[in-house]
Image 1: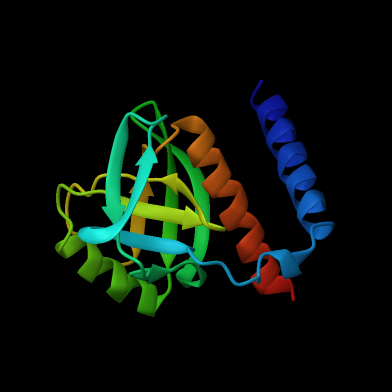
Image 2: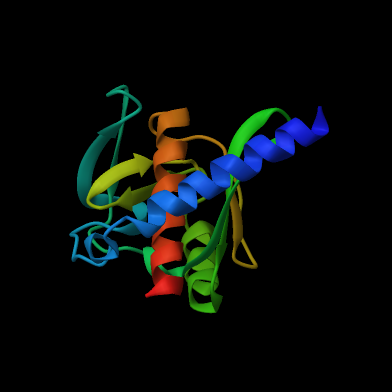
Length: 159
């Protein structure tokens, strides 16, 4: 049974990489108004999420740039699907400052001008490693973020 899971996992990974090879990476390098991690602040722009049941004001400029991400992995913690993200040194410093000042608040994670996740900060994050277990649209938001970041990392490494 273990070998079946390994085979299926290898097949899915191969399919994703084949898809990435055919993806036009120039689309990812376009200039977008919102792309990255944004602080929740009262003077920002209003966004609705969680199927319209929640809203928050997010800053106009990103606190952490999306290109600061080195690695993204789907994981599971205590039965809950998560995304683990690793940042470079600059992104790590930016995230530490952002989370230090955002405890109990949302962080808006934007991809190509779309708010895909808005997790609440539980504690200051040091070391550039973070794990996200919830978002604006649950599983679809996590999957969208994971897929985009995986393609972005692939494109940055191969072009």
